[in-house]
Image (cartoon, rainbow, N blue to C red; front, top):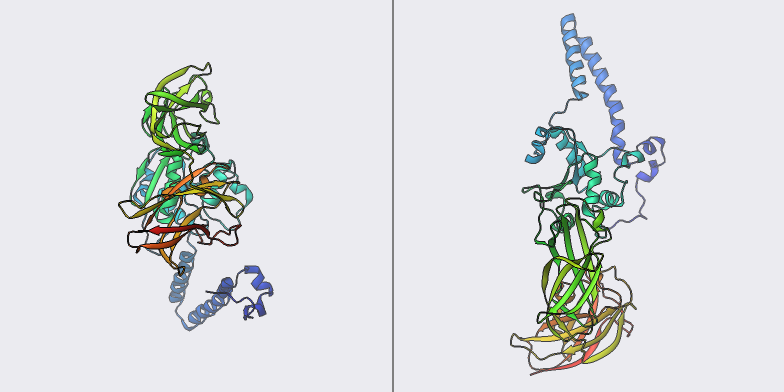
Length: 475
C-alpha cells in the first residue's frame, strides 16, 4: 500500500498533453474512445447498408439503428442495476405538499448519489446532492448558518450550539421538514451524537433509517421528565456526577423544553442537600438564550459547571430550581441525582507533568481489597484546555521490568475524558489494578498517558514518558 512517488511511470510521458489535461484524470482517457468507436460504428452501418439492395430493408435497418441511438440517449430512467429503496423513501411521494428532505451523512462522491437515486422514486427536493464543479451559489443555503455549514462540511452537529430548535427552524422555514439519517452510511457513534444533540424522539425508525422532524412539537415529539413550571421542564438530565472532590468541579448536562412561551427570563439554581439542609447553592442563567425569548415547543441544551466549595465529605443530593429576576424561587424542585464528595487527600504529592500541560499533583495507594484489586487514587490537573483524549495507564512491574498487572482506561472508568477537564480543576481518578493472580513480593508502580486514538505516549518533563510512583509490597 505504500506509494513510491520517485518511481517514473508511463503517465508522466503524456500528462502534459492537451487531451489529457482536458479530462484532468488519466482514468478518464476512455472518454476519447467514444470518438473512434463512433467512427467504426458509422463505417459499419454504411457497409451493411451498401451490401443490402432492397430499399425496404435499408429503411428498416436505418430505423433500427436510429431507435438504438435514441434509446442510448433517452432521458427516461431505467434500471441497469438492482435497486432497493427504503420503505420510508418509497412512501414519501404520498405525502401532500411541496417539501424537501435533508439526508445524512453527506458525501457528494458517494452517499449523495444514492440519495439522488432514491429521489427518482419519491420526487422530493434534496438539500444535498452531486453535480460536477458545483457553483458557489449552490451552497448558499448550507452555508447560511454555522450549524448548517458544519453539518454539511463535517457531518457534525456542533456541541457548542445549544439552541436546538432555533437552528432547526432554518430548515423548517425552508420547507425541509425532515432530517433523514442513514444507518448503513453512519457509524453508531456518529448516530448517537446526532440523536443526543437533537434531544427529541425519532419521527420514524427502522433497520435502515432514523427520521427526525425539524419542527418538533411538545406532546408529540417530546415531553417533560421533570416539569419545573407549567411552561418549562427538563426533557432529560443527560449527565450528572456521582462523585466529586473538594476543589474540583461538578458538571451537569440538562436538556430543556418549553410547552408554552415562558413569561420571563429565569435563572437556574443548583443546590447540594445533606440531611435535608441546603449546604451550598449556585445560580446562573438557564442558558445563553434567555427564556423570555423562547416560544412554545423550544428545545435547549444546558451545560453547567460548579466549583465544589469546602464541604465535609460524604453523601449529598443535587437538586435544581428556577429563580425569577426578583430572586424568588419558582416552580418545582428537580432531583438531579446523588453524589459523594471526597476531600483532596493525596498520600504523596508530585511535580510530574506531561507535555507541560497535564500535572499529576498527587496520589494515594490503598490496600488490596477482597476482589484482589489494588486501589490507586490519582489526582490530575491541567494547565490548558485539552483537545486530545488521553488514556491513563498504570503498570505494576517486577524486578526485571516486566509488566505483571496493568490498567488502561479513560479517566474515571471511561466516564470523564481529558477533553472535558477544566483548567485548574482537580480530577480524582480511582484506578483498580487487578493483582489477584500476581505472586507475593515487591513490585514497582508506574503511570503514564497516551493518545486514545493513536496509542502514542505523552512525553513527560521527568526524562521519559512513564513516571515511577515507587515500590509496592504484595502479601
